Length: 528
Image (cartoon, rainbow, N blue to C red):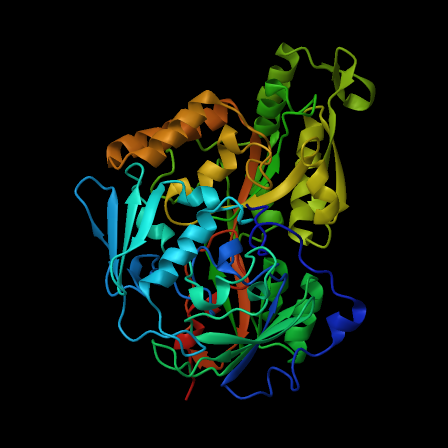
């Protein structure tokens, strides 16, 4: 989404007050605490902790489990299910057998009814889950006894098993509540390795180990996620020992490389920064302007100067090392081409070097979220490159509450990216049926070639057909860009070097809570 922020479906990260930003997240500093406790600084917090509204939909929730989970290499593995699903020959039926003896943190047993309730509630149009379309293929979900769940699909959907990392909630608690407003949103009960102990909105969330976790009681007994929006404040608090770890921009993380008590983790991602080019705006609606902006961009300079090399140029929504990436679409800055495109389209150079056409100046506003230095730097570099071609980009910071109602007309420096199957991220980013649907298809992009490719990729299980569809989609995006893709950024984390078992996965855009070296926190062990 994401602008898909960590706030699951939408909404902004809380802005800390000066007092909250400087107050300690726990009763003792991170460095002084025992190895069975950890304090981590993150940039934002969720709106809700309910999977029914989208929390934890991509897995790795510490409170909940899905039928399946992903390992370090993102391969699917059993979680609440005993094994990977049995799939019918026609690809329309997925059958899961549940693991024996699993209980929710309140002591009640997990049954197939809980799984059915979870999926049916999410699929109910009355539930405010903006990710419902991810389960579009589901025709029916039913229980076959207490320990078996059967999904019937409307059409063969090759990556369906990956959707079942979605967390399962207890029917006996959630069924009696309104999923949109009920207390379960802030008082969750799950089967996961941790239980929510407290939540001070805008300041911190504290979790304690679930001693009855089916996977074994975690060694790290207490986890505090300190919500600190400002990058510099997180770095300062990490340096002072107030935090055990934090996510940081590459330039701030670099300062810790000489600290022998800290370890830096550099995770590759599908997370890209992009500029939305709304179709309602008279300037960005012009295809020639969009093509010229793409040609004018120096992506490698952004990687080198803004990300300190911790990233890669983005030539589309998929990173260059993804197996689905369309080879040959890489392109360098070409200002001569950008100017030629604009000249041929009738955009003539005017006052101050800014072009105009039929009385319309080639000028538009680019919004970025306040406090996000990496997006700010991307926005300023983008504006600088655009000006060289004669296009004026007026950069402006704002909160997400201000940005959201302006997305229809103004460009936004956004972040998206989902790991796993290309359908996971591309459909919501590009399909015309989702134009203007919250943070889905923010640019309101509408291209029949892309729609057809997305539908084909989603509705067939034939690998060659899917590869061809996503290849044609990426090439069409070069010809008719609805977004200007800038960079794929690495996520950089710094943690006290006091535990073993820390690894990173290839991460999606959403990170901080689920992704990071703490994705497998329940497996951490103190260093001897």
